[in-house]
Image (tube, rainbow, N blue to C red; front, top):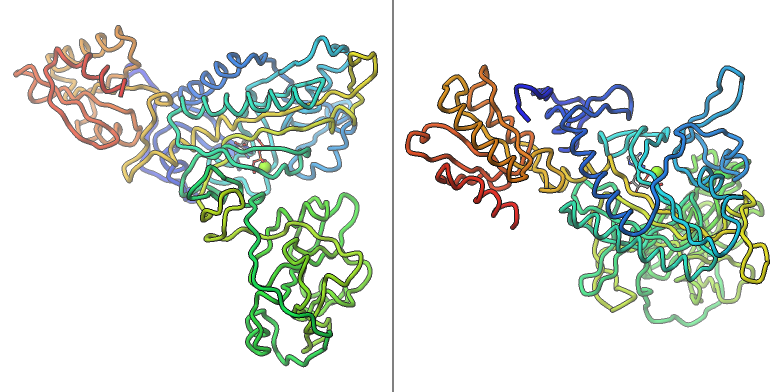
Length: 569
Ligand code: ATP
Ligand code: MG
């Protein structure tokens, strides 16, 4: 491809809201153009990258035996009524009416559509398993679309869905998908980590996420320094933090004037904060109602919101305002487990289960309780609520846990029978008995990956594509294309590289100066440049490595073999 013949509208201008390098460089490099909040067009170079990623994903999915299909981008709302998600999906689901007043949605994911496709077409265990996938546009009306392609409203996803007659077979496919995804991210040249994940609104149990490691990642992932353990903080666990057990004493109400925080109370009472209960008050949003929820964790711990949300089965949690708190009959700063109002949801962290001598609020201004014994109380609800901290101990091996940042680039779930049951999608098992399909679902964020590659691979000058994602591997830069000998030599190298099967572009623009072309090379991030310039008379050109910006002089006859060597490494 020739620069002179390719639409690559590079610009010096960075969008105001572009805080991430990928967002800035993809716009400045003319890869993508924004048309609305979270909506992007792909221009020629962007489309090439997208297609390269898509091709790797397709090849590995096909190798794994999945069948490519295509679901309508628009699906009737009635399908979503069948699964119940028309009410649970909330505002991310974009709904609209057609001219006949029929209700439709733009697909944010396609569990309903795939169940509808398979239902009544696959009827016997003999026809299972089935795995169908597509690489298609999704729309989610995200509350905060941001970071360019990273969190769009319209985006490209590979979504696959498998159907099984047994849990074992689902687990086999789930493991196969884990291996398939690892191959995909490895082929894309990315550093990534597979982690335990929360299953979120899609439901079911058993799920893993694939994170591209990058400082700008939105997700905090917890990793162990000595074993393979990795988990999204939303699902991370640790070895319980245990200090010596105190003696049981009788419960006592004590005055704690103006002591609202754990620090203030523990200092005032001279009690280690470890032996206190921290109350976090939230508003839990359900399908048809809102309730106040109090979550208790140890004074030295922090609440993990996703875990808290799951523990009460809410759609989401919101911060409770001062009014919410007082209207619920609670006293901010003095909320405790004894004597809470009745219609409040209460969950206590698992690690407090055996505690017999704790300090907590007395549900009365300026008072706390000492000697609170949870082991003697009835009907308490416990769950894992804590956010693992850096330095905590790994429950698998005793190693040290730490945080790293990741971009979620894929997610695989063992769904079970959630959708097949809701939508009455069944098969006949070996005994002639009707059973709901056992399902798995598997997503790859194809357009998010375009951004993720750049988040992991860039410098202050621009993009640095990996070899499998680069629109072109080599940019032949003709320093002065008005000079016929330079242009001819450049074209010869260009043809030579192409005939060796190397994706090459030639910067043959006559009106641009060398410095400008070099600037474009650095911004656009092709892995190598071959500069045809001053030393042409001596039969020499320069190879530039985009990653290191190192320059090497080579004989014009050796260009193809040198480039081939570089690509192999
Ligand atoms: P997130 O937590 O980032 O919102 P999710 O859990 O909603 O992601 P899934 O429903 O599992 O995502 O979708 C599968 C994949 O699609 C994700 O792993 C991610 O790579 C990609 N993805 C999800 N939402 C977006 C979005 N708004 N823009 C671009 N890619 C997305
Ligand atoms: Mg999401």
